[in-house]
Image (cartoon, rainbow, N blue to C red):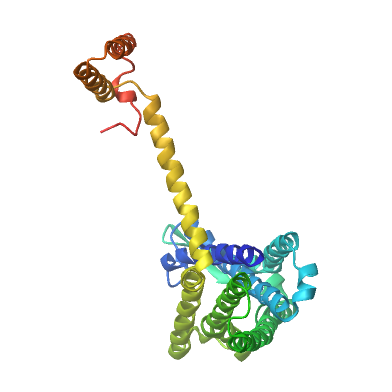
Length: 345
């Protein structure tokens, strides 16, 4: 349950990253806009919003690795430390911390208005944070440490330990030769599936996300304007695509590796479908108006009458005629344009 809470929180962060990054495909290359609108303000603030969800996803992955490390390597201590309430608090703290840490990025870009030939163009230009070089350098260095290098070191340590413990557990299972109970084996396999899912997420993070983040900081250390360097721009585009693939493919990864996640998603969607279907049947049953509905009702009554008469049952015929009269006394009902959606043609 704890791991699924973190998986859901991570999936939400990944989805928000994809949503916030998608409009960037419609931004002009020179960041010059003919009017004030959504794209202008998005171009100014998109870096901050995207950074929030990048940091959120990174630290949620770290918290998942920490939880798996404690559960696998220190199972006795983890029962006291890991609770559902603490897991929810940790997730909320990660979201809040990421949002607060990236607040200064909202002031990294500004909007300049220029009038030319009677028309006004607006451009998004980068600025030094709070007009202080020392603060800008310090913030960038802190972001590199907190957002990249510390998480990478922690993820590397936790996942090396996890892979070593998984290897040991498989060796122990082979040596036991089926002496353990079926229930214990199922619990062990479920725990290993969650751990393997996490390891796959971290491996994808190292391959697809880390190069893009490291490239940004290396480019900043050079202190040159690399926007005109064709080689650098090509590498940046490739790494950005890799980063986007990671955040959009995590959900598919959960479904492929983790059967419990697939089962939960299937049950959730099937429940919603059955609920909508039940609501449709309820609305259809409650509606008596409309030509089609009345025709179906009278047709069913005529069939019942015919069946009863063919059997020669006098009491049954009486009840059927009574029910027919009660239906006939209902009246025409509402007009056809107010019929239930479930019965509309």
